[in-house]
Image 1: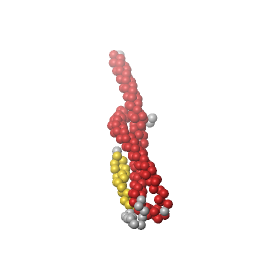
Image 2: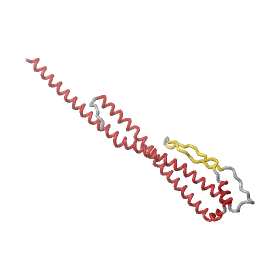
Image 3: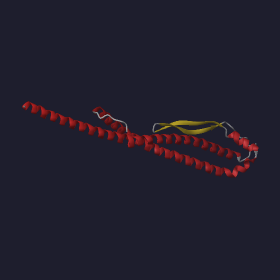
Length: 203
C-alpha cells in the first residue's frame, strides 16, 4: 500500500479516486461480460467451420482416386487460384476486428470436352474448401483479438475490485480515524488551555 498523508486534502483525493473507480467498474464489468459472450461465439464459429471442413473432406474422399492423373490435378489447381480474399471490419465492445466476406478466384473456365465429367464438382468442392480455410483464418484472428481484450479487461476489473477500491476505502478509514483523533486532541488541548487561563484569571 502506498504511503498516504493524513490530511483533509488527502482524504478528498482518496474519496474522489473511490468515486472514479466506482463509476468505471460497472462499465468494465459490462464490457467483460460482452467480451466473454463474443469469445464464446467466436469459438463456436471456429468449431462450426472445422466441422464443415471435416464434412467436406468426407465428401471429397470418394473422388480422391481421380486425382492420380497429373492433368486433373493441374486443372483443379488452375481453377482454384485465389485472386483476393475480401474482408471487412467490425467493432465489438470498442475493439476493431476483421470480418470475412468472400474469396474471389481468378477467372477460369473448364473445357467440357477436354476434362473429366467429375471435375466440375471437384472444383466446386475444392473452392469451398479454400473458402472455409480463409474464413477460419479470419475468425481465428477475431478470436485472438477478443481473447486478448478480455484478458486485459479482466485484469482491470480485478485491479479495481480487489486492489484499488479496497485500498481507497482503507485509506479513507485510516485518514478519518487520524483526523478524528487529531480533532479530539485539539479540543482537549483547547479545554485544558481554557481551564488554565481561567485559573490564572482567578488568581
